[in-house]
Length: 485
Image 1 (spheres, one colour):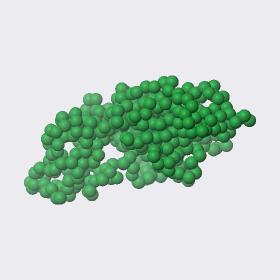
Image 2: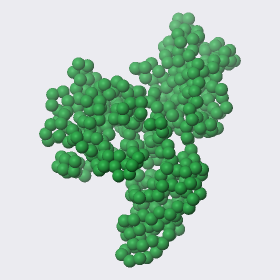
Image 3: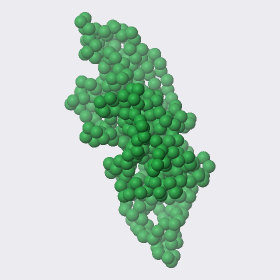
């Protein structure tokens, strides 16, 4: 692998950030698929390994216009290499009109359409993927085209490395934590072998698990429309009628022409907040008699009840004559029974209560470890720093966390530059909450550094940033480490 990297890839990279583009033409459907492959040197997630190839792809129609964009992710509903989600081109964030924006998750390197925190139902674990608060400066990569032979790019000289049969990195060293280096692009299943089939089996992003767990996700089928507001402030309304007047950064609105569904996602839900959903008839569905007969129509709600540590799934099957004045209202909160209140004639009074046809509650851990607040240093020798702190818990200050992440940097560490700080190794396994921890970092170069810790629980939820300590690592001879306040 090292010979392939040194001889075939390193010369292509130079000093720039590079993505490798691959063309796949599907003549039977007059489609062209352009894939962009990214290489990451290290994958510091729960399945830590060296060498990580990730990709996104854009699908063009016969006229060369983009119609879909697909991002690779991880989801145990699909084979590990085949996870991802898709959006219609109109729903993808772009720079200008041609460049889709990719938000890379810290650690997993999964590609997401928006910068939020995502929860994954992976291998009977709840795992958390973070694209914030670690968003760095945007990168517009240099594109290096893989040569095309016939209808698609393949592994021809001098570009044979995509089909390398080995692993892009060392063998895993720590059982259950480290894994072998990642596979080559051509060893990632349908993504490489049949990109169109891979696209077809992907969920739309608004329907993917990572946009259901921990998010308020409300969807309606045609001919219904929807809006959502935070109570008591009507200024927080979002929906098709208010999209031109109100912009709320943690909301997304989808009008998917492929599925006919309209969906609102609230990416950041807070406890003690009540949301009011209103459901009406789409103007284009109104018949001459100003009504439509639903046969039936489905309303689907996912709501994270943070106070109860559950995600509620409520599905409503509606078979009524829905007039132009009819409004359905759902109050969504910890204390609500989530009944759909039907005002059939628009007089403001509830004429009928509809309970969810399906109602399920799933337990989820929403509580990350508490942030460490008493990180300090002990006297150390050259090339090392000894730290001490009080162990937090798995849930806030209770229980036992899973792992520590200790980093140092040449400037004060913040949420913004955390991703750029230097990772340390050979860290202790967390003790039960309240235990005094001691750890010595070795092979630290001489100079002045800033050190901070984050704690990780079994859901891969990260604590907030600890207090930051400044240390001076001496040259050559033993001197105590100095803590500067």
